[in-house]
Structures are given as C-alpha cells and as structure tokens.
Amino acid sequence: MSAKIISGTEIASQIREELKKEVQELSSKHGIVPGLVTILVGKNPASISYVTGKQKTAHELGFYSIQDDQPEDLSESDLLTLVEKYNKDPKIHGILVQLPLPKHINEKKIINAIDPDKDVDCFHPVNVGRLMIGGSEAIFLPCTPAGIQELIVRSGFETSGAEVVVVGRSNIVGKPIAMIMLQKGKGANSTVTVVHTGTKNLDAHCKRADILIVAAGVPDLVKPDWIKPGACVIDVGVNRVGEKISEKTGKPVPILKGDVDFERAKEIAGAITPVPGGVGPMTITMLMKNTVTSAKLHVGLKTE
Ligand code: NAP
Image (cartoon, rainbow, N blue to C red; front, side, top):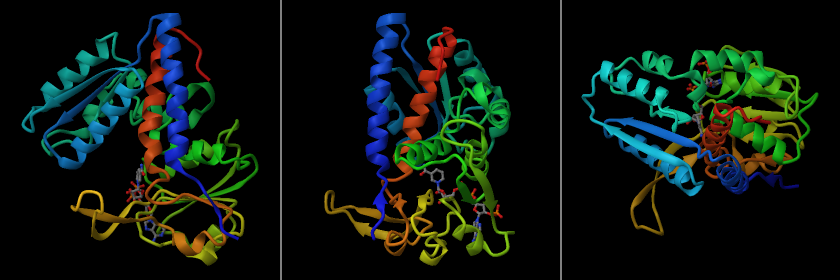
C-alpha cells in the first residue's frame, strides 16, 4: 500500500491562514502588530533568497516588517550596535540575523547579543536552555524542528508513547527535535533515540521507529527495509544531486533529493514527507508563529 504523502506546502498554508486571523485579531482587539526585522550582511545569493522569502511571508501575514540590508564590510561592532537598536525598538518583536555572516564577524557573539525574548530563530543559548526545561519555559521553538512536530501532529500520528528515532544530532535539527518530542506534553511524550555516525546498527534502530525523523544530509541514506511498516517518516534532508532545466523558466534548477529513498519507502511507510514540499515550507511559517508569540508576550497576552 502506498503511504499518505504529508504535504508541508498544504500544512504550512493552513498555519499561515490561522496566523493571518490571529494577526488581525491582535491588531483589532489589542492594537498590536507583530514586528519582524531581518538583518542581511552582504550579498550571498542564497541568503538574499531566504530573507526575501521571510519578508514576503511577513508582509502577507500583515506584520510590520523591516529588511535591513548591510554591506559585506560592516564591522562586528556596528552589527552589535544595530542588534541593540532593534532590541530596544518596541515595534520589533522578532530579530533575525541571516546566517552565515561574513568571516570577520563572530556569529556566536551576534546571536548572544539578541534579546532572548526577540530571538525568533531560537538560537540564543537562553532559548536552547528553555527548550531543554520545556513546558511554559520554552517560549519559542526552533523553526525547522517546530515545523517537523506540526507535520507529525497535523497528520494525525499519535506521539505519546511512540518510538521516535532521529537520525542526526545537529544543533539546528537533530538535537532540538529530539528534545521537543521528549517533553511531557501534547504532540510529544515520545520515547526518543538519536542516532549518528557513531551509532552501531543504524538500520536496527530505524526499524523500531513509529516515527522516523531523518536529518543527515546524505541522499537516500535510509533504505526501504529500514522502515517499520506503517511508520511516519519525516525526511528533513535537502541534497542537491544535479541540475535540470526548469520547464517554467527554461533556466537550470537544482535536482533535490531527501535522505530517504522516497520512491521505495512510500510503499512501506504509513505516511512520508516529499522533498521538496515536505519540511522545507514549514520553517518560515514557524518563524512567523514565533514572531506572533513574541508580540503577544511583549504585551502580556497568554500564548498556547
Ligand atoms: P549537519 O549539521 O550536517 O548534521 C548531520 C547529522 O547527521 C550529524 O549529526 C551526522 O552525524 C549525521 N549523519 C551524517 N551522515 C550520517 C550517516 N551516514 N549515518 C548516521 N548519521 C549520519 O546537518 P543539518 O544541518 O542537521 O541538516 C541535515 C539535512 O537537513 C541537510 O540535508 C540540510 O540541508 C537539511 N535541512 C533542511 C531544512 C529545511 O528543510 N528547512 C532545515 C535544516 C536542514 P555526526 O554528528 O556523527 O557527524
């Protein structure tokens, strides 16, 4: 039987509609407009495209949004001053400094300078700690892992008591999604195993998973016979494996592949995310959700 395809595009669009309503309500009932600033240093084409996508979404949702472009040779101290300016700006609830930064700037120093209560990317050590503590402490969830959790929950998979296996232990995906699924609460309460390059018998761990989350960055790493029949498979990997000519534009575009052998895995899994169109569209959406949460917290409103 073929698996249900979990469409990140559709789920992201549902969440954006919910956020749009929330933004309208915040404005009409409380006079607050969520404010997001994206700071871009230099002209890295991938970064320009990410920041443009974030600004476009913020605009569509009715946010107050600023795109602050800075030259490649901006000094570290000038960037710290800029972050401080937005830390103090009451109209701004979310500050995003697009990474990577030019080599002469210490990224850690910049992330640590962002007010943790405006750190909507959830990279500040204070927010990483809050996530570890969980419950109401975790005001923001990091965007890609939060998107993964939404995909699982909104696809109707029971997480409580489920065996969750996470392939990969990066600070941006593997570790935080493991921590999210481990929490005692709705959409989590799972038994979590994290595997990596030091793990023996990777396949045996994956085969136990009711929910298998793969974030390794290795095309087709997970074979169909590593998947438990009926499991929910979330493929986070985005691997460029070549180029093709786009039918729409006639220009070369990358061929993308996930970390799971999708074509064969979908015959065994109960549900699976495609690449592209799975986890990808969720990340920006969860950034917007964090900004709305931040706006509410800044005026003392309750969040979920
Ligand atoms: P990363 O920092 O390179 O970490 C990869 C992790 O996978 C590491 O922990 C590594 O183990 C583990 N790993 C690699 N090869 C393995 C193997 N053969 N067996 C077992 N474990 C293995 O990657 P990342 O930043 O987490 O990203 C992972 C993938 O997700 C990439 O393809 C990335 O493009 C994609 N991604 C997508 C989104 C999105 O869609 N929005 C967001 C973020 C990332 P060790 O720790 O032992 O080295």
